Length: 193
Image (cartoon, rainbow, N blue to C red):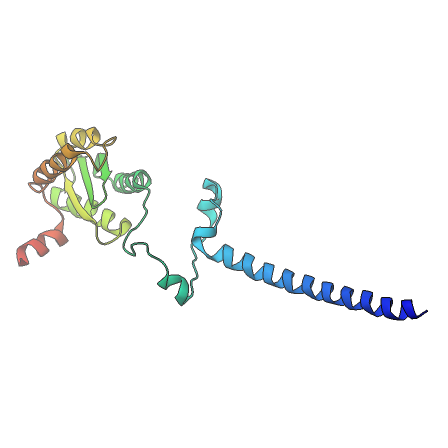
């Protein structure tokens, strides 16, 4: 009988301790799961359909931000999707027959073919404002109604930014694009300088 008096409380104590640890582990596990789901570097990579239907949200605490050694100004942009979106938006305007858009790490180059009804200054304004409304503010936007530049832009679509000839080619295209109207807003800025 004495054995049961000693054994039974020991078993009950062990059961209570184990049960409490299980509750703490579950609540801690829930907290870790919530933290993992709110921290971008711990999230799973969503499929395209999930990504299209998902809202963008991030939550950090001060310690996470202070330990983050990434460049705060680096932005990851799908350049092909941005170029596609800009081009499609421009072509929704009646005065444009064709458009080509190249998005680099710092520039957006847009060349287009107009129909006879569209004023070149208005077209430049539409193309420039379309890109500005779509891209982050640090991008330089260049537009042109010079149709031959569409082929020049196309020739770069498979290029790498780290290619030595790349910078020279981009600079030459930009130089040619600047000969065309750049939009009303850009012309006002250039006149004040």
